[in-house]
Image (cartoon, rainbow, N blue to C red; front, side):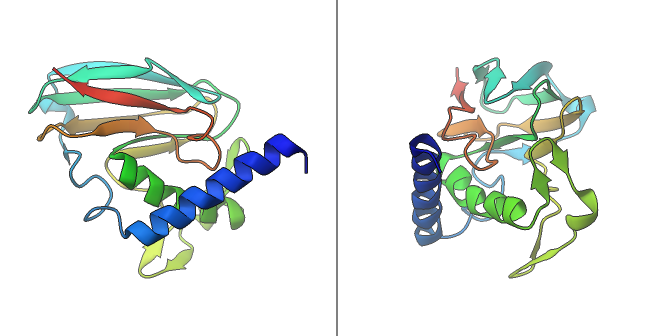
Length: 175
């Protein structure tokens, strides 16, 4: 293992251990970051392109109470995630994403959908069906419609192991 791979692995493992000690996902994935909504309720649409370890745009501006329809497109060669949450939520979620890689659900540019029903324990599966998140193979696109009900310290991020650490996250700024 070369030095750069070792450093990325060590950072990812230390973040996972920190997240485990910090507790759960602040009352579930998406709690404290807003709530799902219907496309017909959207105030506007933002297209987000996921490339290999960066997003376009790199940050988004929202108003408290605004409902945004995100059209998320994976333009990269790897599986990527768009997940709206707090930094602490992302730290905790990275542990689950590591399990998806360890169990072979995510392999580079491929998702093994048939394995996503696998039981991870504690009532969790690998379905990755939370309303604040999409996990996409290269060339795929999906939508998230989200209401930013409260101001907070939010970001959007890819929690596939190593991607967040490589800089694949962006700020959600409240106007």
